[in-house]
Length: 177
Ligand code: FES
Image 1: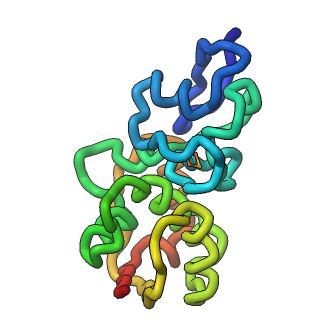
Image 2: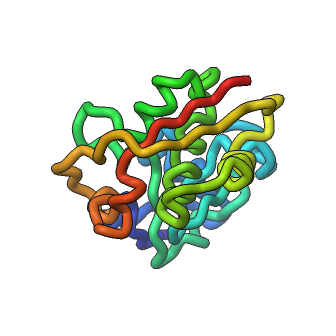
Image 3: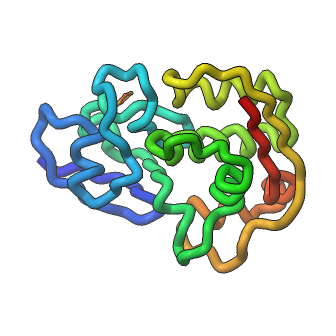
């Protein structure tokens, strides 16, 4: 079967079997930021944004995204430069082992698009959806610091440059466990 999807801002037709998970199809499509973890919808490592909501792809059939928008972390890097959210994770050590970081970055992106100045509780809630493996005793501190890089080419990235995102266009995220 063929699934038509807006993948990282680009219309795509994904070939898949009816029983295949979205995780399997995205990885076969070369989107390796979609991590293969528990396959039960619990760890969150495979999560992407589906219609701007963070969703575990291992428990979704690829056919369920017909006509929908799917955003993976690859969309944040049209150049080799890190996205500010990725840079913040790197700067603060929030990347941890790195395996679920792509999903955490997307969860942070979703949060900041909805709430440019989130509370610690909101950050905890947003990131807990994609990280069930850590013993979080952390302090999250998100601050404005520098603008998103210009020249991003995907539709998902272009949305980041909209005025309502300007307040969230830069951040510093510090995590201490
Ligand atoms: S691999 Fe999908 S939630 Fe763990």
